[in-house]
Length: 442
Ligand SMILES: Cc1cc2nc3c(=O)[nH]c(=O)nc-3n(C[C@H](O)[C@H](O)[C@H](O)COP(=O)(O)OP(=O)(O)OC[C@H]3O[C@@H](n4cnc5c(N)ncnc54)[C@H](O)[C@@H]3O)c2cc1C
Picture 1 (tube, rainbow, N blue to C red):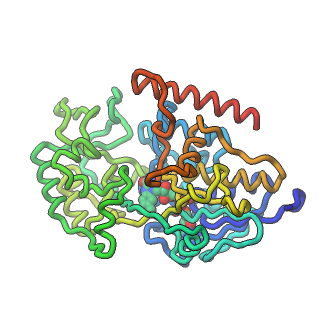
Picture 2: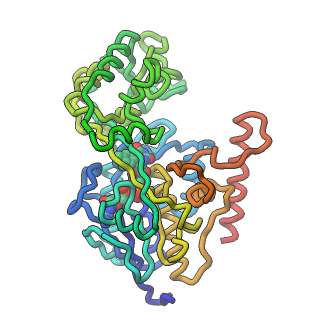
Picture 3: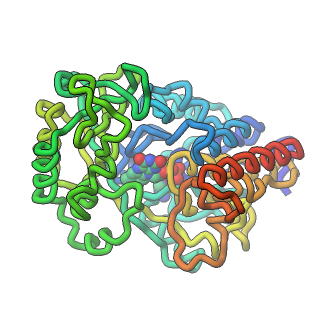
């Protein structure tokens, strides 16, 4: 049994969102951490820096509204004292109702805090297995190194599962033609807004769709066939959405609803939204435009959108395989491995999807590893809470097909509400009640 006065360090593998959140939860309770992070010695292919807590794609952590699933999850995580969310609010950039951050300032702050903490031993190495001794949290993410993934798969007796995800490009603000764009948030009555909207006429939209469909994609001979079937629905490449029907983009990422062009005073045929990507507001990302086109083609095709005709691209899109494990087989709702309770899993490797969800499981794993050390009962939020519902999902043994999941109201059982709005309101009320009661009990 670990000693309370001189606790043994907890090993954490992976300094991403889950790993750094877990680190914080431990060190704030006086428990040392040995944190393994392999970058930049071993690259993941998607991360661009050697910073901890790097956001690989969008700079948005999802909705901040209290009546949205992601907002509800944030509320619970903040009550638990989430370091990642506190840091996100500190480096927040305007993004309407979403919580978006200056990705660079956000990751720098996390890196400074974790690497500079006297109770953290930072090991810049690739972990290739799970140490048998002591408490361990595996938070190596969707881009876990091959050697470690092979080890995990062997150890947990399952083949790993995977899906594909693509990154959206980022452009310089100065290169956006504001004579062809306007500021405004969807459904907002304010004349100005956080988003830059790039309207398109029908003809411009058709030209853009034609170019997207004909553009050359990055050749992925080994897995493209498989990839086509296995995209996470919220992250499909824009060219793949376009291929599903000529109107698909207009009803998807380029939907014009809730936006009125201040010049024409009408709704445009289609609109691409750009979201601020840093505090200086010198960079903007193309919302919903994850892509796997070859790089030259990305520039050419996106420049067909009038406001982007002179756009300077600072980052281009690419596609990645996301791996996760078959958690229902071996994980508990406290995030412990059933036959080895000193081992925890956290982050996207567990089968949750998204920045906030990964942070949430990191928080719980860190908290529970701390509570084992301190001889306290483990935290296991009830199923009526958003975090509890996610944990039930990733550990539920009866899935026909286990696919990654983000926070959403579909995770809760049916009730008798007559409308979708009533149902959502009932879930939120019950989630808040259950969370408050559980939290007070803790
Ligand atoms: C291409 C792509 C785009 C995505 N876009 C979004 C998005 O827009 N919005 C969203 O909400 N979610 C997105 N996700 C999903 C996911 O929520 C994020 O990847 C999130 O960062 C996962 O958090 P994590 O802590 O589990 O993993 P990560 O944040 O990836 O952290 C894992 C860390 O472990 C390190 N590591 C891996 N293997 C080893 C090893 N063997 N030894 C030591 N260190 C190791 C990695 O270098 C990394 O730093 C995306 C994922 C991918 C792959």
